[in-house]
Image 1 (cartoon, rainbow, N blue to C red):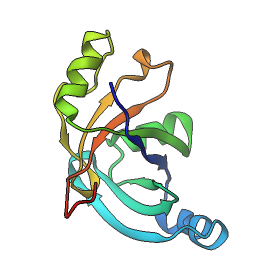
Image 2: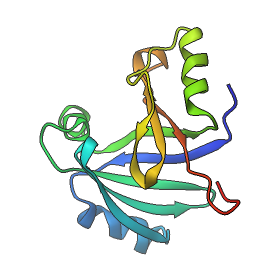
Image 3: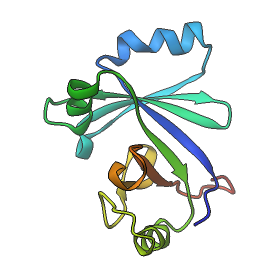
Image 4: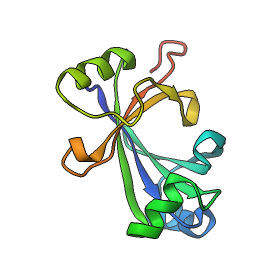
Length: 140
């Protein structure tokens, strides 16, 4: 499997409004915008961190996976997203290597990307996300 780059790091927060000043004012990261991902019941703030992005994930419902994560572990790193091409093929390859997937097929995530998560029980306790960004005007 070929990984192009670390696409982003997802950080679970109780409140984007309260967390954002640390990232923008203290760290000086450019703020790129906010989006709601209804399928995951989260609000996502995007920040540029060099070649990668940081996504602040605020739960919109106590039933969301991010809310349950915060309840169990507190705020902090939720997942690491790996940028790939042909996500369906990457999922197939991972499954051939015995990696358990949370999603067997990619679904739409934040920023219009196709995403799928590997189960942390197959990856040494780390939640990894595969992320295939749409190709636009020669950029990826």
